[in-house]
Image (cartoon, rainbow, N blue to C red; front, side, top):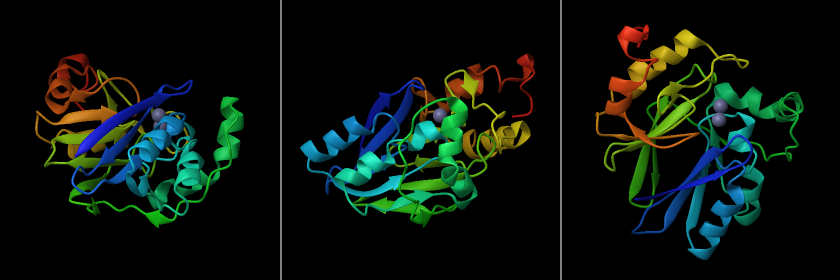
Length: 217
Ligand SMILES: [Zn+2]
Ligand SMILES: [Zn+2]
């Protein structure tokens, strides 16, 4: 599997293009302001884009869905159903943040916890990890040793929980049950900032280690 990071916009959001090297089948994860670069790569490398996968529906993670759809018409758009209403409220969220966001095509398919999403000879597993957003999921490849964790956990930090539908205790439970249960060596690719590993966050993330008061995790 080949994973590439695309970063863009005022929120410095990370989108990921994940491709099966044997078949060229690919998925675009969280195409935000970086979507033009992602669309260029899909086109220039002749990838067969089979899906847009969304970790959650915050505007910085979905504002480029229409760009990907423009290059690959009718590509399915997968989102957890608990984030559908937020996705639909994009114009109001954009107004609240004072940013201009294009209208986006509707999600077409529902992600579910435990689902294995296959593209070519590659796959990622879907884990439900709410708290930052009510319908947040992460995508895990045990085989390739990485997880796309969206805004659940960052290098040295965790997702904010003050936005509508956010809940701190739910987020901490998601981190404990869905992230810290992964192998220490697994690389975590977050929605903002650099990659890290499960082990580094388990040992060094001030929100997660007990002597800083992070004993909830
Ligand atoms: Zn978010
Ligand atoms: Zn974000």
